[in-house]
Amino acid sequence: MSTVTISTILIAAGLVIIAVVILLIRMKYQQDDKEPWPFYAKNPLLEKAEQELHRQLIQALPEYVILAQVQLSQLIKLRSGYNFGKWHNRINRMSVDFVICRQDFSTVAVIELDGKSHEQAIQKQRDEKKNKALESAHIRLIRWKNHQIPDVESIRKTIVQQHEPIDLELNKQRAKHEERFKLSKAILWPALLLTALLLVTTNLIDETVDLSSQQLQPLEKSTTLPREKDTKTKQENKIKEQKQQINNKHTHNDSQANHTRSTPQDDQSRKVIGYRELQIPGKTWDECIQEYGKGIREINPDVIKCKDGYTETIPIYNK
Image (cartoon, rainbow, N blue to C red; front, side):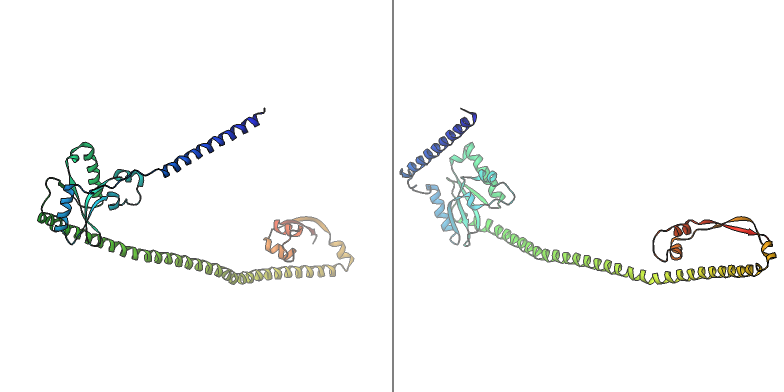
């Protein structure tokens, strides 16, 4: 057998084993559902000391709602940004004996009735966690011993005269803070939008200014170009006039020379006795192109000769 067939057989056997395990688990749960559930009613719900305190709370605080055996997780919530599993495990399965609420079911105070079990080390640790949790949530906790339950008048004095005014003041302060927060939030968003609009408008203004400046620059150049052209044309005209004058002089001299050559004696007398070199200086590209290139920007020998300058050989005649 090849290695491929062995691997396929092992994979198939593994899948079969997994399917069998899943089937057995499902069959077990189905059997558990068919079995009768082993629960019974807890009676009474409150111990004798708790029942006595509950009756006195109702008599002392008729305008309040009294709740018994409330889960701690129903009283407090975790602030955002914290690990839910980590902090919820610390208060999991904890409950308080009594919760005193107003008619709108807002919490006034929590009452714990401590018995002998609360003197144990494990229970003390649980009570300490409960104290920290309620203190963090700003909920007042009152602890009474189960063998020292106060009377109706003391209960009302403790709750209404000592705790309730403080709670009302705290609620007022919280309401003020919430109103301020809402007001600041209502002002903050328009301010942010306004600053954003200002930034956008300033950027648009800067862009328009840049565009206008870029458009004005060609206009300025266009206004300066005719002036430059005028000056160039004037210079070119002057150069042409000077050349024309020189040509006229040459033609005049040539005419005189031709006139003198009419006689043989003059021809014999006017002879070339030598040569001299005349250095012609170079000119600018624009002048050379206008003169030798006919305004077309092409490089030809005449333009290069005009730009670099050249040496011209002139004959020397006898007098």
